[in-house]
Length: 257
Length: 297
Image (tube, rainbow over all chains, first blue to last red; front, side, top):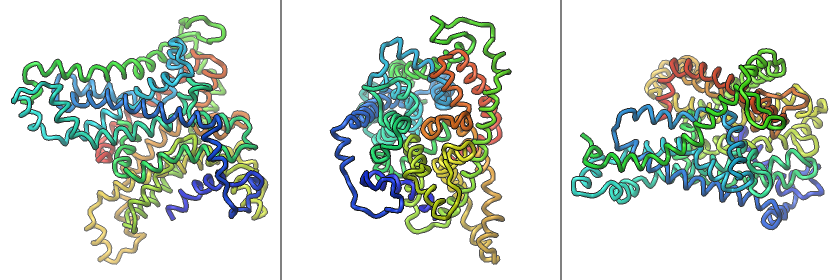
């Protein structure tokens, strides 16, 4: 029953993506000899570029997010200082802003910096978007590390950077992985910001889909479906591989801290 | 005492945190504040070289903007209907998962896919399903000798289409939250009701449902606020059309900013909406914060 709600739409998209062009509009034809030409074409045609852009910027953005957020999470977990709760709240606050809030200033800023339609612009933005969520996720994992472990190292004379590098981060592996995957998926799915800061060279998969849907829609359903399937594949892989961590993180993401 | 208070630790820790804090302030908080400032200015990038303060002129304009009023009305309709459908489907799905079917976790994973995949792809999927040349939904109508409907090209049905796609994407979230609330109910209560001879329906309506009303409100509130500002699927599926029949309030803002280039006025609308939402959010947190907290674990 549950699957009857979710799956048919997926299957139909997959079906369209391999349906030969000449029977594309024969909707009664559900069984046919599939064609994978469009998947092959995507590698060599200019549709490969947006996918590559998406992959590159999402990964780089997630890595930078992780670098900044995991260090900050260490401080938020282990150091007690005045105003900590307030600062933490301030860091989480942007998660509650709907994306339209910052679209305009971000586009102006990117214009001023001369970064419109560059991958750098996307990486800069993606890094910032996921820091709050990543800090929060890292914190839930870091809280599980026994403090005594770090304390005894400090008493033995280890410096703070050494403690972080040798003890805390190695133990935070699962948290790092969870934060990376979530940041990657959110970046990969991001649409509005790539839409307003990129146009051609740096456009992402989502923007490419939009260009198709907006333009010569009627003729190109096959390629559109292929793009849709390709854009969904990493998500499906991650879901199958890391279900538990993802469900935890997505509930958190939806609740917005 | 914590080890962090030992010696020079504090400075090193502050340095660890600093980059992330500065980054978020620069790229997340500052832009939001800039939007608020822009809302006080006349700034159409076609005519104006720089933003100029215009004595709350934009806020006066909002009050008389009938297009905005219509957009707000559509957003409310969209948000309410989509949320209702999502809660209904979510509730059914959660009850199903709560009955411990075989392969539950795998099923749950699959069920959650729509909310994890890109919203643009969700929009594409539903555009395809409703399309008159390749879509199965018009085809089904044809087979059943129903009316030939231009689903996304007719005002009312375009809205119905958007609501369906939103329900498909977000019913999983409602299901997930309600499922976690149902799991928190002690199993003994199920057993006790059963041994008293309660049917499955009675069990659900008399035992389960009364205990998850708090979460129903939470899930509904989350979806209402999110759906109210829906933009991605509107851009992909209808572009706000036909005419302005699906021009939700975010789409209106988007058009003001990126098609009419009236950044000042667009910022004003955003700021006003945010203020309204902040009030709603504060009210909501105050009353349901506790349920929300328990949902996280």
